[in-house]
Image (cartoon, rainbow, N blue to C red):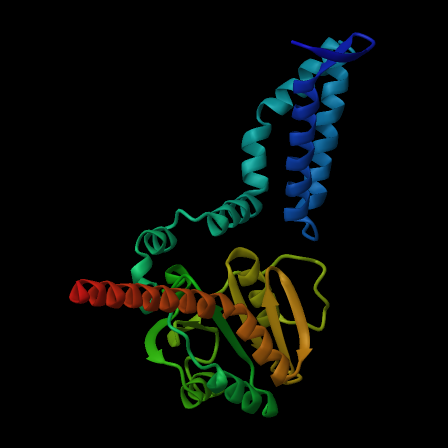
Amino acid sequence: MIFLFSIGFLEVSWVDIIDILLVSILLYQVYKLMKGSVAVKIFLGVLSLYLFYLIIRAAQMELLGLILGQFMGVGVLAAIILFQPEIRKFLLLIGKTTDFNKDSFLKNLLVWKKKDEKEVFNITPVIEAVKTLGGTNTGALIVFSRDSELKFYAESGDLIDAYLSKRLLMAIFNKSSPLHDGAVIVYRGKIKAARCVLPVSETEDLSAQFGLRHRAALGMSELTDTMVLVVSEETGQFSIARNGKLSHNLSPLELRKMINDYLADIRRNLREVEEGTEEASTSATIGSEVKAGA
């Protein structure tokens, strides 16, 4: 092993440098994950205690090291109990970013099916519906999904599987409707389910003016690759939650642009498939003409 330098009795090598960098990156990502929640204070406390334990071991204080060692021995189990929501959130984030889920894996293998799966839909009924809902201070929560049916969340409500329309959205979010309390999930131009239960964000950075509906939208955007539209019941204002960030007091024009940008990947993929199909058809036609000429 090649040593770079030594600090007293410590000899530092390239492996040690890489090890320290990787641990630093890991701790920073864990801190970002828990930033704004109560768990970050517990995490900093546990980290400080562990650093103190390492200093005690390096100083060879056997009695204190033995006591802290017994405590740290059950530290993994205690961390699982204390940080159960954060661990679940971390695993969900990993699952969100991977391409090996069932839908994405099949889509990558069966490219020719993308034209059917990537159906482009008109968002005008949504914009018109939320404008009316906002004008009457009727609360609404609409989840847009590009690549997943969100079955776990859809099954928490009532399955509908109906084509998107302004009248249907108005009927669902009508204050006297039994379906108005909860979220609507929109996927491939259809309302998959209504009255769905969404995860609530635990961040402390959210202003007190936002209620449970906004926290649910933020929590959903933190855990899934979705865009969530919120109509405030108190003010009638529009908000968009995306990637754990909330954009507030938006105009209908801004709503349309943000949703279209989110759905842009669908349209791009559809154009690529159509262009590929046209090129294949053209090549086949030219090949047939060449054979006929021969």
